[in-house]
Amino acid sequence: MKCSAIIVAAGIGKRFGSSEKVFFEVNGKPLFIWALQIFENLEFINDIWIVTRKEAFEKAYGYLKKFNIKKVREIIEGGKERQDSVYNALKSISHNTDIVLIHDAARPLVSKELVERVYYSLDPNIDGVVPVTKISDTVKWIKRGNIIGGTLNREILRAVQTPQAFWYKKIMEAYKKAYDEGVYGTDDAFLIERYGGKVCTVEGDEKNIKITTKQDIEKMESYLNINSIYNIRVGIGYDSHRLVSGRKLIIGGVEIPYEKGLAGHSDADVLIHAIIDALMGAAGAGDIGMHFPDSDPQYKDISSLVLLEKALKFVKEQKIEPLWIDCTVFAEKPKLSPYIPKMIENLQKLGLNVNIKAKTGEGIGFVGRGEGIAAQAVCLSRIKLEP
Image (tube, rainbow, N blue to C red; front, top):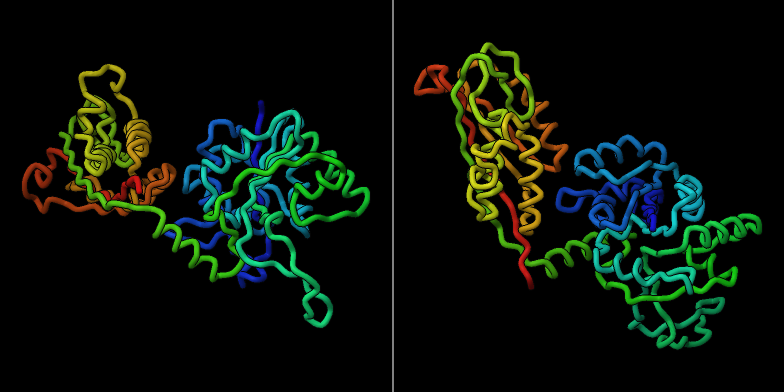
């Protein structure tokens, strides 16, 4: 079945105090990316559609590139109300879509388990699925003049979250009817309910909080600190290659004009090799040679950026999250500083935060004599442990 996800990020953030709410960064990552990465990494999600303000398109695309989000098919302009924004996306996605998941970007702590629970609970006998949580407080309704009108039975009340899952044809039909009648609801399930559809509930997640005010950011940070146990890891990488004639000089994925290149089985990208070594060190997984041996013909002349992508996939499977990489390239010639911005860009495309420096050998040693180039890298990472 074809499943599309709609991420709604078009709110004006009035109570938050900023229209940039979804771009507010926690631990170096904007709120909408926290949510988006969960959907990106789920196999049953075929494509993702983001709805946001038109003036935020460029910034959103920049973050998608930085965090290597590949499933986003298109960014859609939002409407005046949330319902308008969702409808704009529903009209844009492929009409052969079977299931649509609708999630608010303001819920950044949505979990993989919750999305799976919602998705797999949708069956042909129902029209939609929503996650809910029990209400622990006593709930009263208020009359004019702030007078209590009565107490509601909290045992039958639930707080509703997103993502919500629907059969695409069913939710489109409900939206069209709502617009014909001028009806607006506070969530998508309301429209299914209104027109006689059957909506099932599943257990929600207390951590799946909605960021409405800046005080909610403190709640989010509290959940991240309390419910996640991390162990900091540091990996150190080093590599060096001889300069020889008849080879291209490639450093950091950038081809640099020079009379010589680096000798090696792959493209001999000394900087990328040092970074891979640092990543493997943080994962406690040996070095680059153990994973990509120069005796293996499949790695002959391969781009080291491809090797880095494979290395990143490996360390993430080990629950290693690279936080920061600091690198130094040692070369007497050529001058590398003009090419460093492009090197950083190449690495940021893979989701890495890096700093790159270039130093000479001051005429000392094999670097100083122009016989070769070396690089070192230090990777600060964290590994998530089981609580």
